[in-house]
Image (cartoon, rainbow, N blue to C red):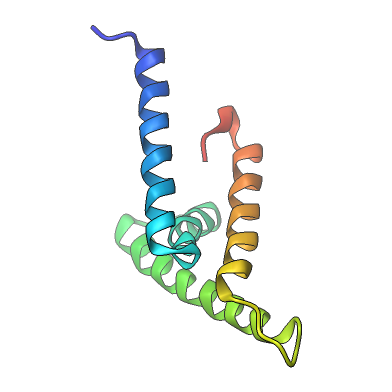
Length: 105
């Protein structure tokens, strides 16, 4: 068989590169699509069908909240929504990684 540890690290590296390139291509707003399912899964125990629906709703709520914050923080000026989503989503995912056992979100 394969050495499990090196295969696992290789898979983590490939998935990290794939995630980074997807966010780079789609923009920082797409980062909400990575944070919303983790937020729902950590708060709600439901079937996969409900998790999919609730994740979509959570993504919409996060984007709406980010847009409202972007409009209100520097009132006459407007921040790009991507700045707010990257700060909120990145901070949340880093917090989840730190909190979870063995660094698995």
